[in-house]
Image (cartoon, rainbow, N blue to C red):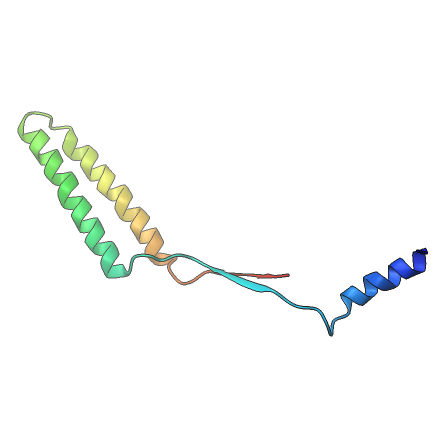
Amino acid sequence: MSAPEKMTAVTDCIDQSHATEFKRVARRNNSLSSTGRLHVFAFIFVVAVGIAAAFAYFGARLMLPFAGIEMLVLYLAFRSIERHRRPALQHLKI
């Protein structure tokens, strides 16, 4: 096979009329709604503060500030998720 035949074979494969385009779209997975996220936060808040209050009752008073910091960090994380919840799309064409 000579070199020009190889070139024509490659150009035949690239012909746009016979080319197939594959398109994939990736979306962010928002598995919890805003209400669901609020319920999860409320449940974790009640459990964490309840455990911290029980420890504080038995003398470990430093548990309450740490539970408060933990809930603040969790609130900030959920707020960040809520702010960026609009669907982020990534398109890939081959």
